[in-house]
Image (cartoon, rainbow, N blue to C red; front, side, top):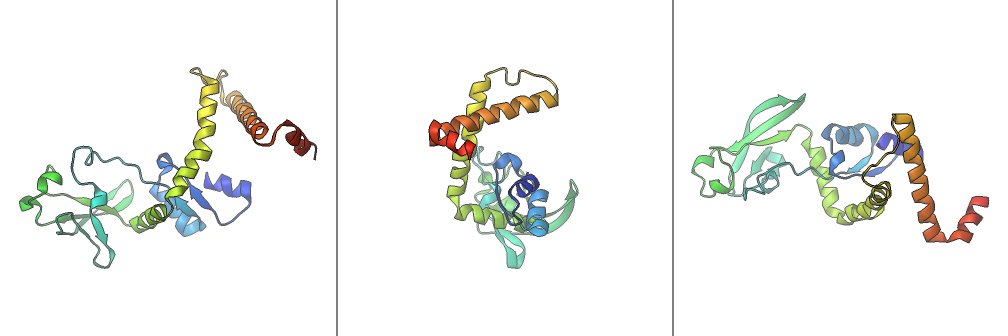
Length: 200
């Protein structure tokens, strides 16, 4: 998407804002290191720990200068091993005190709470800090992006696309988007001003 946006806008430097569904660590790394693109994409919340009343990975604080985590019980979770998962190097940390920790029941059902850290996780941490500094960015995205999709879904009804095959569906979608944009422009500018713009 960011490649298409760069082509459409014609700008080399971009700030890309997306929702959790677009989160991909490898692509965020490519944007940051190779393309010079600033990303704002929240991490998916896939852990059930919080729902189960246990600590989440976000409750473990990474100490960069020591390359270790501090757990909620103030214990050090140090690097123990490195594994490769889906082609990514993951460092595994855990605290030695886990089995005798007084708050272990809020941490892990097993003896040790293991924390995985991707070798390029600092890129994701930096992005999270940018998100934390700009909470209004997500609200702005919701206001500007969610509204069109909600309106289009309401217009299309439960059947969604009426045509079959990708070229026809593309045409149908393009017509829907054109109709949405014209309706929004009419609401914002009014008919006379919109016609004047179209004639110019």
